[in-house]
Amino acid sequence: MLPGFIIDQIRQREEEEQAKRQVPQLELPVPAPEGSKPPDCDEESERGVIIIELLAE
Image 1 (cartoon, rainbow, N blue to C red):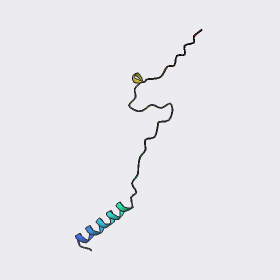
Image 2: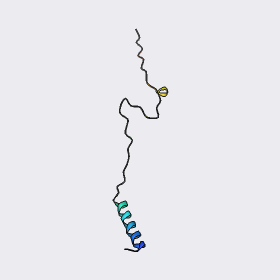
Image 3: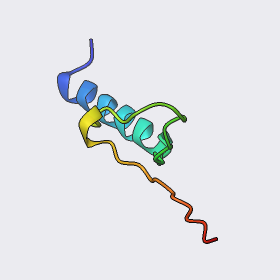
């Protein structure tokens, strides 16, 4: 059996190697699919756009 300090050194080296192998990831915000609402949106706070076309005669 190996002494405790050697086991700790081996474990530290393995953790360092794993950290070096990990590639940083970037998470991008993805727009929600049409027809779905964000989870913090309630029905009363929905806003929209109304277009009124005035015709002059």
